[in-house]
Amino acid sequence: MFRFAASVAACLLAFNAHAALFEDDEARRAILDLRQKVDASQQRTADDLRRANDDNAQLRRSLLELSNQIEALRNEMAGMRGQNERLARDVADIQRNQKDITQGVDERLRKFEPTKISVDGKEFVAEPAEKQEFEAALATLRKGDFAAAQTSFVAFMKRYPQSGYTSSALFWLGNAQYALRNYRDAVANFRTLVTLEPGHMRAPEALLSMANCQVELKDVKSARKTLEDLVKAYPQSEAASVAKERLVRLK
Image (cartoon, rainbow, N blue to C red; front, side):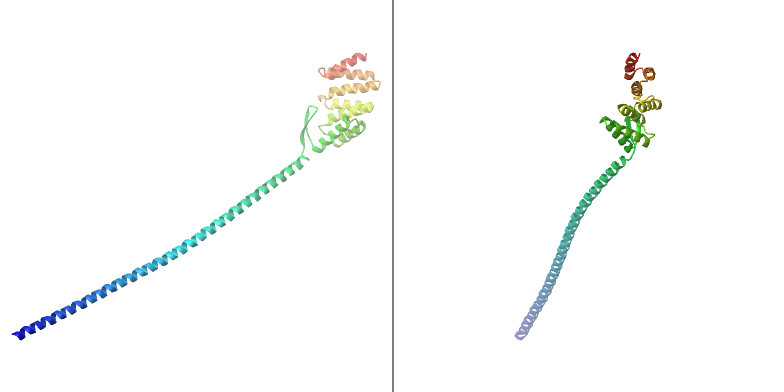
């Protein structure tokens, strides 16, 4: 009985020892599994962290590259703005030069283009050279150089036979000839003026001057006839008032 009890006790002890050993193995395996899981988790975390670091590094590189590209674009845009400003200045300079050239051409063309003239109450179109030559002849007359003025007016009418200045040129030519005591030619030119353009502003003065020439030529009869024609044709003119006074003296 005692031996049986001892055997049972030995079996129980062996069983308990085996059970304890079994539980220790299970615990170790559980610990190993847990450790493996932790290690695996840490590895994944390390891998994830490494990938995140790699991604961050790549992102930083991308951002740096983008920043460099933006800066390059800014520099390029600044350069383009500078070019645009230079181009704008160049275009403005070209436009100013073109304007100056155009104005210069226009001014030169105007020197050759006919212009509207108003002389002795008469308006007409004359060439610049024509106007200049007439005014030069008139200036010569006003300076008292009657011989040169006569030559200039004769040359002017030969050069411009259809000129709107013709009647005025005849009047001043007649005055130059009167001053030179070339009375017959003066009478002829005054008469031509009145015949050519009786409505001309200088026509009454031309008749009065013609009568003066006739008096100088001792042709009193013709002078009286000229003065009477003047009073009849231009009764309201100042020349007509002078003509009336001279008619009284010629009686």
